[in-house]
Image (tube, rainbow, N blue to C red; front, side, top):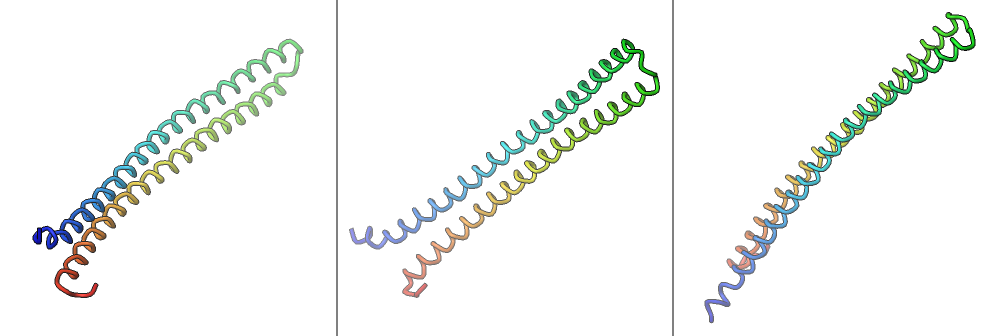
Length: 148
């Protein structure tokens, strides 16, 4: 039984070290999961922005068709219709590019957040290893009669 009392500080330190390392690894894994989710969201944002851009183009094509039909029915001059269609084309292109830019900006932000999450996880794991080493050193100091 005396051997158990002598071994108890080492057992305690070992359990503490194992727990610290386990927590550090779990934090790193959670950061990797978070990063994976952010990367998926980034892809979804990009795809969504492409669809939004296509929709903006489609809306301008429909509007141009409607203007052409109404001008033919009303007998408007060709120059006025050409100017209006040109304006619709410009606005449609602007709206399309704005939708793409918005999606790309959102996607880029999520990719950056994913990189930050991975770096945070690695840092937490490294910190856990340092904490484990500190526990071991503290245990050794106590056993050898040194003050920590």
